[in-house]
Length: 353
Image 1: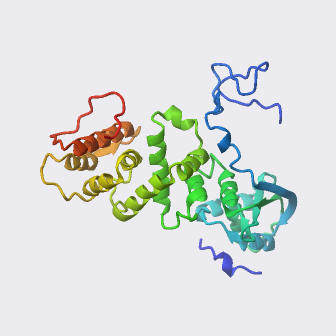
Image 2 (image 1 turned 180 degrees about the horizontal axis):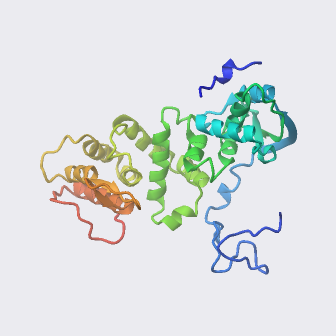
Image 3 (image 1 turned 135 degrees about the vertical axis):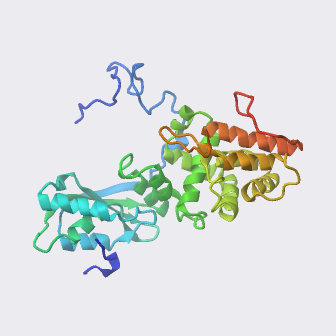
């Protein structure tokens, strides 16, 4: 099914709070019994300065509208948000099947718009698939679904980004979508593509917090915020390097390698550029025992281990081991050492020298 472009259109409070455990009713709401699982951690390490990220977003009103073809066309004409997901024709077709068969539940649909005070634009926050489905229904079907429409007001475009990132989270909008909505096309990030932005956030998270449990104490919003504020210059040095040297180099475009770049660029940016240029391009070696060459060979012949996925041509390694191997090669390079292989002997991370 081929869809036209928008420019071509005619003008219970008693529900349990957690799963996997029970809530102690006598305790503070953040204190859970041992068997309970929660993303609210005692002590809240995120800190007060990260708690008001969405403070300039207001719900102005909520209305109920009849979603006809004309109304769907009107919504599709609204300004498209820069990080909006690409239109999936199959999803549109699935929605149409539900509508034709009488299985579509309009009371479950909530559409949203956002007015940005900074640039005076009104953005469509969600609902493009639903609107396209209605617009392309057979002509003998007359849709008139009553749905809820939320109208938001945002002070700046940054607030629009934050609002967009909150919709359908953990379902249709993944961490990748959240990163795109916060950073893609933003001032200072215009020249970077989606893959580079998601790679830099993943690498930063791995470098900043050594263990998976530490990383999970910070949601994706907080990770983007910390990187964009406290580590802005460092992140951009690495983004610029990846943009220039690593676009088509698969052995470089990994979260564990990017995490090692954070460690090495923070230590000495000039040496880091020379080091990673050789690892990336495979040139500039004066000896077969150059640690940069050994690292390139290691990355070329290694794949990140994933359950149920294997590659007989590559050695399967963990992300943490790959990160530590990168740092070990860097330390040998900085010390002027040569090596025949890069074998990890220490259980803990080494700092870059």
